[in-house]
Length: 446
Image 1 (cartoon, helix red, strand yellow):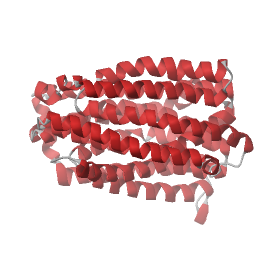
Image 2: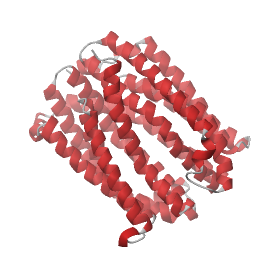
Image 3: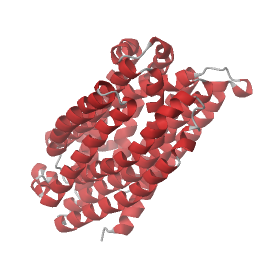
Image 4: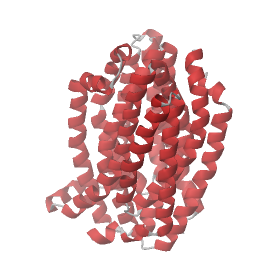
C-alpha cells in the first residue's frame, strides 16, 4: 500500500536531488558574489530567462511524468515505451532549436528584458554558454521524468550529486583561476554549469537504456503513436502553461524592479530568492513525489487511496514548510550576509525575507496540490487560476504596492504573497471537491 513510508522513499531522494540541483545555480551566484555583486545579479537575470526556456521543455517532460506514472500503475509497459519515445524525440528537436536561439539572439533577448548596461556584459556571456547547452537540459528533463515515474528517485539523485561535484569544481577552478586555470569569472561559471549538465545527460541516458527501457523502443514510432502524442500534449501543454505563466510573471516583475527600483533592489531580490529556494525544496520534493504516487494509484484504479494520499502529503509539506520558513525569517540578517556585506542591499533584503516566510506557506499549497491534480490529469483549472491571479495580484498588485504606493521590494513581495495564497486555497478546494476524478487520462487514451 502506498502510504507515508512510500512518500518518504520517493521524496527524500527527490529532496536531496533538488537541493543539489539548486546548488548548481546557488554555487554560481555564491562564488560570483565573492567575485562581483554585479556578476551575481547578471547571472540571476540570465537564469530568469533560462528558467522560462525550461518551461518549454516541461510541455513534454511534465506530460511524460504523468503518463508514464499512470501507465506503470496500470502495468501498460508497451504504452510506457511509446510515451518515452515520443517525448525524447520531441524534446530533442525543441532543445536544439532553443539552444541555437540562445547562441544567436541572447543579447537581443536580454535587452528586451530590461537588463541594464552594467549587468549586460556578464549576463550575455552566461546566457550564450548555458543557454546554448539547453539542448542537453531538454533531454535530461525528459529522461529524469521517465526514471522518476518508475519510482527510481535515488538514481536521479546520484546523477545530480555527480553533476554538482563537476559544477562546483569547475566554478572554483574557472571563476577564480586556481591551480593554473584561467580566471574567467562569469564565463567560467557558465562553462562549469554547461559541462556538468552534459555529463549528467549522458549518464542518465545510459542508466535508462540499461535498466528501464530498451533502445529498440524507438521502433514504436513506426506505429504512429498518436494517442500517446495527444496525451502528452493534453497533459503537458496546460501544465507547462501554468508554470510558464508563473515564470513570465516573474520576468515581468524582474523588469519592474530593474526599471523602477534599481540594481540594488534587483540584487537583493536575487539573494532573497536564492535563500528562499532552500525552503522551497521541502514542498517541491514532496509535490513531485506526490505526483508520482497519485499517478500510479490512479493508473491502478485506486481512486479513494489517491484522494487520502494527496491530503496526507499536503499536510506533511505544510509542516516542513512552516518550520523551514520560520527559520529563514529568524536568521534572515545572518543568511543575507553570506552573500553580501553591502549595507544598502542588506537593508532592502532582510524585511523582504520576513515577508517571504509567510509567502512560502501559500506557495506550498500551490506546489503540492497542483502536483496532486496534475498526477490525476486535472491540468486546466490550475492554469486558468494562474492566468488570473498571477497577473492581477502578482504583477499588477506588486506594481501598485511596490511602485505606486512606494513600498519598494516589500510591496512587490506582498503582491506575490496575495497571489500564492489565493491560488493555494483554490487548489485545496479543488482537491477536496474531487473534480479531478473526471480527468483520468490513461482510461481515455487506452
